Picture (cartoon, one colour):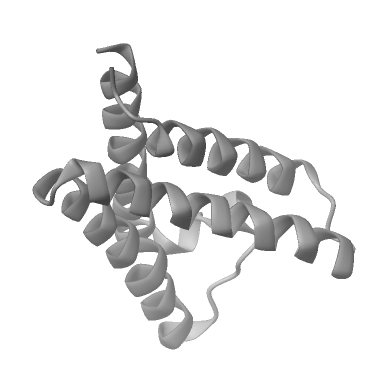
Length: 116
């Protein structure tokens, strides 16, 4: 039961990240390091960070959880793996990246667990 609760929290966190990006795309620079430039940049943030995270989170609630939760977990673990490599390649070992890795690994691991 505890794992299920943690998984629901991870999915809700995914949706909330998407909602924040959707409604406040100009405010995520401190969170992501991405600076939206012009309408095109704002649209990209709304669509990728907003809609994609909302859609994947909602899908995890609607679809078969034995498949959807691990799929979302793989997404988070993949993002973390690429982020780690990129941090060294791009010389961007910064606090915000370290926090993001921690969240991605934690959410990814939780979503990969099989509930009791």
